[in-house]
Image (cartoon, rainbow, N blue to C red; front, side, top):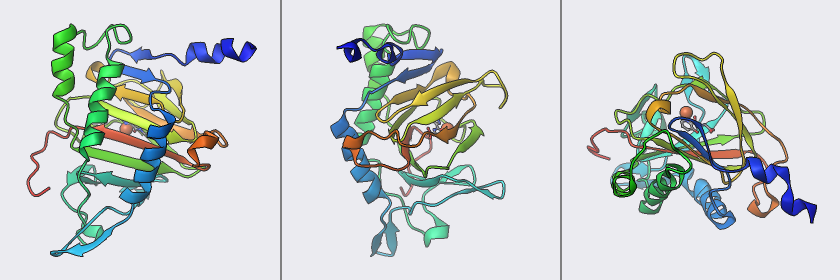
Length: 249
Ligand code: MD6
Ligand code: FE
């Protein structure tokens, strides 16, 4: 059974890429991935107006610096537009996002717990057992950005710095494998490390890597697991704690 001892499995181990940035391949079970894909379709549907407010942000391509992004974005908790978080989306008739469900916030805590074990992430945050548990339980992500990549979509190098909290960003992906380019915190240039994010992979950005430049130069066709039933494109969900007050949200 040579497949049992394939080298490919050796490299798909949890790995601290830089201090604070940890990749955990195959973190989500296939059932969890299937559930998230089902929710992805629901989150993109807007519910009819009730008491003057409709809920749900339709997937759209945000404009940044006058250019439309190639990914399609929807979100939970807050609407992201012009590099800021808003309670509502004026461009969609004032629609408000659905809340981040409890189970998804819990998934965020489970992700921090899994990624920042001292054995996999020796450099940061370097907590002992009780401190680690307390820190994990304090994570309360109040926004989820959900990006859909059609086969030729990509995302340019950027920093995520619209949040006022320095708590980590939790990122999970489903569908086609994406080439994730991890850069440095100073500028968009080299050195880079290209990491393959496959369906079910987790990557977290915290501490010294929280403001690292990164992007997704391309996604790889025909890489979505058949059992997922999502043959084309890639879904990426990032959870963040904005540090903003929840007024009206
Ligand atoms: C993506 N992700 O994987 C885009 N940002 O499609 C991000 O931009 C990202 O994965 C901050 C932290 C983790 C991420
Ligand atoms: Fe990002």
